[in-house]
Length: 63
Image 1 (cartoon, rainbow, N blue to C red):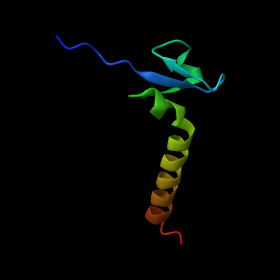
Image 2: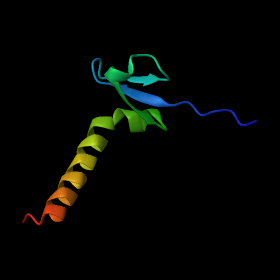
Image 3: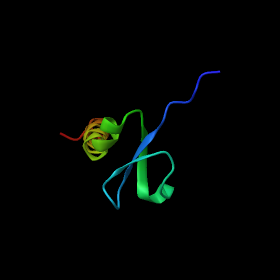
Image 4: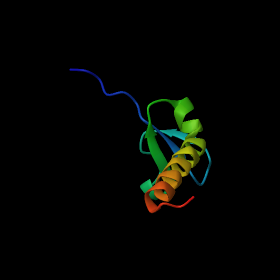
């Protein structure tokens, strides 16, 4: 049986990366496949929000 890969989370309070379920779910975002990806969690979230905002504007027909 294949061993499960570790998952990494970004803690919004401490601004640190955690491996596994260290803190409450309300304090973390993820999971991310690598520690490095978790370190860039806020940048990733900002890019996704920008993409979704653009899609919303296009759907509404905003210029």
